[in-house]
Length: 433
Ligand SMILES: *Cc1c(COP(=O)(O)O)cnc(C)c1O
Image: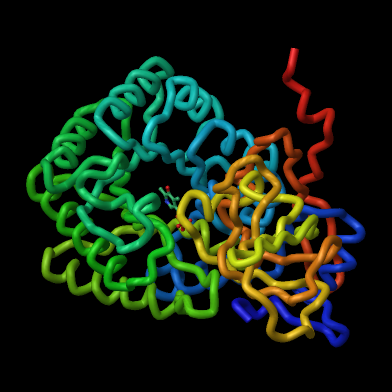
C-alpha cells in the first residue's frame, strides 16, 4: 500500500488507521474526508525530532497550514510544539479560534492586504515574512502608526528549479513569489528593511516549490541563502538570526513515488550548511522549516459512493462518484496521480480500467484516469482515494452548490470524531440576501 495506515480486512473491507471505511461511510455519509490524527502526530514528530537532532533546541518546525486549515489541526500543532505559517487573515483567525500561540505564527503570502497587516498586528503575530519592497513599506507604516517594532523575515528567490509541477514551483528567478537574489532586488530589499526604524529584520526565508524529492534542491537552496546572508553581513554588518528554508518535502501518492527519509534529508542539509558556514565564516543561524503537505497528506483519505458506471463501447468506461473537483481539484490543476481503491471490494483482484470522475458539470472534473476497478463495480460501491490530507479540504469549493464534506478524525485504532461538520443546504445560502 501507498502508506502503512492503509490495510484490508478479511471480507474485503478497506481499513484506514485500523478502522473500517465502510462503517465510517455508513455512519457519516459520503463524500467524506478522513484524517488519521496519529499519523499527523507521527509526521510532526519525525520533523521535530530530526530538526532538534541536527539543528539544536532552538530550531523550530512550522506547519504550513494552507495544506489543511481548520481549528482542530491548530490544536494538534500546538500540542506537538510546532509553529504555524498562515497566508491570510482567514487562516490566522482559525488559528486564533484554536487558541494558537501568536508568538509562533509566521504570516506569509505574496500579497498581504492592508487589512491582513492590521489584523496580524492587532493579534500580536510573531513574524511577517515580507515578499517585496512595497510590502516592507506597508509593514513599516503600520508598525510606525502603532509605535511598535515588528519582527520580519524577507522572502528571497534563490533561483532554483525544483523539478516539480510548474504550478507549484516557486524558487525560480521569474517566480511571482519573493524577491530574487540574482537581480539584486533581494539585496535592495534587505538594505531598505535595515533602515526602517519599526522593523526588526530577523533573517531570510525561501521556499522553492512543493512535492520536491530531490535532496540536492534543499541543500543547494540552503547554501545559496547562507551565501546571501554572508554578503549582507559583509555589506551591512547585519547578522541574520534566523534562516527559514521553507517546505516542499514530497509525499507518496502512488507506490512508484519515492519515500522521503526526513531525518537523513535534514541531516544532509545540515552537513551542506556546516560546510558553507565554515567557508563563509558565519555562525549557524536558527533554523526554521515549513512542511505542509508532508505533515497531513498521508493522514488523509476521501471516501466516495459510486453513482453510475458508464461504458462507451469501443471507447472507455467512466465510474462516477458523489464528489469530484469540488473536494479534490488537484487532477484538474496538476493532473495529479492518486491511488484509488474499491473500499468494499478489496478482495476482487484484477478488473477493468476506467476514468474515475466527479459529479460536476465540467468535463475536466476527473479524479483519476486509468484506474483499475473491479469489473462488477456499480452504484452504491465505495471508492477510497488515498493521500488526500493536504490541499483538498483547503482547496474545496461549492461549485454546483455542492456542500463541502466533513472531516472525521480517527485515532487510537477505534476512536472517531467530527472535526469539521458537513455543510448543510442552509449553509450554502448563509450569505445570500
Ligand atoms: C506552501 C508553502 C509551504 C509548504 O509547502 P508544502 O509543499 O506543503 O510542504 C511552506 N512555506 C511556504 C511559504 C509556502 O507557501
